[in-house]
Length: 305
Image 1 (cartoon, helix red, strand yellow):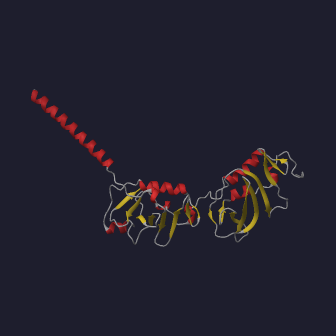
Image 2 (cartoon, rainbow, N blue to C red):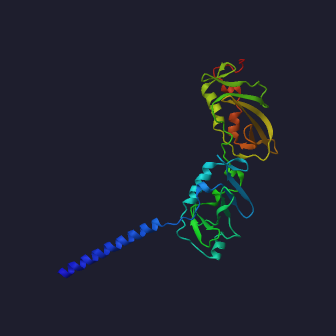
Image 3 (tube, one colour):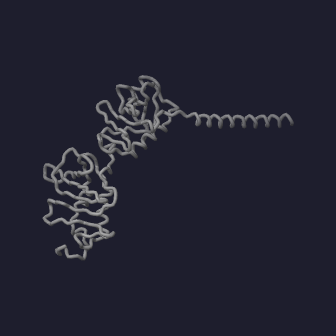
């Protein structure tokens, strides 16, 4: 009887030792998880994204990121760098030259190449992205290594156009807008007047404006977002002058017509930012409101303001 009890106790102890061993192994494996990338965000001062035909470079200045001389989307760049830094590189899925070819991460077949540079222009790290084994996963290989990993990225995140990295809010008006004046508008023979704030109240040439409509109109400039860079300027239809904290800004709005004379695209320019940018049609139409759109509904539209 005693021997049977001792035998059962021995089995129980063995099971406890086995469980403890498994838990220790799992804990050790987690603690020793290898990072795919050795990048440090603070050291990255430029990033180059390329495929086999083209490339684009995003650079960090003293206070902001830029792409092609225009303001880049700093939030997107930071999020991607954070994502890269935390990628798991513990278990490669392959390590042969033929696998690199098959997964399109060889030096001759890659879909994306990401290169990161320090403040001196020296390369910090470079790796290649290829095929996708599953949703939001991509095969990746560090330059100079044979090991191929499946990591949580996608080629789509690393676009090759300026628009892919552009800060779409680069034209938004910051600060307190105190006056908006449409200087010209080709589709209206009405003399355009100024929308002015006086002691927190919006007026048009001394006439009380619809306060909700006026505020909504002014807010559009503070929340202005573009679609991307415009390749052509188009035909000017309106110029708008805005006073912000005693500083004068000017916007120019143009349209591009298709072969049938229909509006194909809107283009906007700013006195503060070099270049021309595509604007969504619904945003352009909101900006092109007339004075009468901002007056109270009970005011006779024929009444002289």
